[in-house]
Length: 202
Image 1 (cartoon, rainbow, N blue to C red):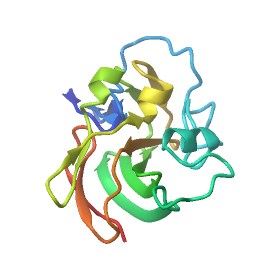
Image 2 (cartoon, rainbow, N blue to C red):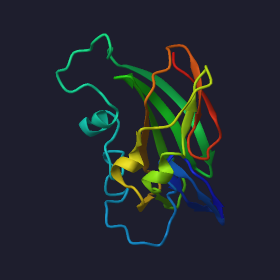
Image 3 (tube, rainbow, N blue to C red):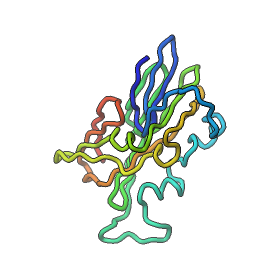
C-alpha cells in the first residue's frame, strides 16, 4: 500500500490490487474501517461536495476571508479576482485531483481543487488532524517566501474523519493562504504529498 497526502484529503483506492492513499486538501483520507456517521459522497452527489460547502457557497466565502455581504472594496482590501486554472495535480487508475481555480480577495489566496473518482470502486478517504494539516501543504512565491494555509476544507468541515467517494462522484476541496501573488507571477504549490505544481495567475 502506498500512502500519500493529496491535499485537503488523504485518499485510498483499491484498483487492480493497488491501494493508493492521498490527501484531499487537508488530511490522510485513509480507510480506517470506522463507520462514517456523516453523509457520504453518494448522499451529496447533486452538490458535488462531501460534507462541506462547494466552491462559491456562503460558508466557503467566509472561510476564504471574503468581504461580508454588502461590503465595498477598499484600498487595503481590493475587489477580488478569480483565475480559471484547470491544472491536473494527480491522476492514477481513474482517480484525479485538479486545481480548478484560484481566488484572490481580502489579502488572501484561495485555491479550489476537485477530487474525482473515475474508477469502478469506492475511494475511501480521510482527513487528518488540524495540526498535521497545517504543515502538509504550502506555496513558494517567486521571491522565495514559503506560505502555509490558514485553513482548508478538511480543517473546517471534517478534521480527523473518514468517508468514501463513490465511483463517478467528486469532492470539492480548498485551501486558503494569507498572501496574494501578483497577477502574472508564478508560484509553486505543494498540495500534501502530490508532485509540486507550477502555477501562474493570468
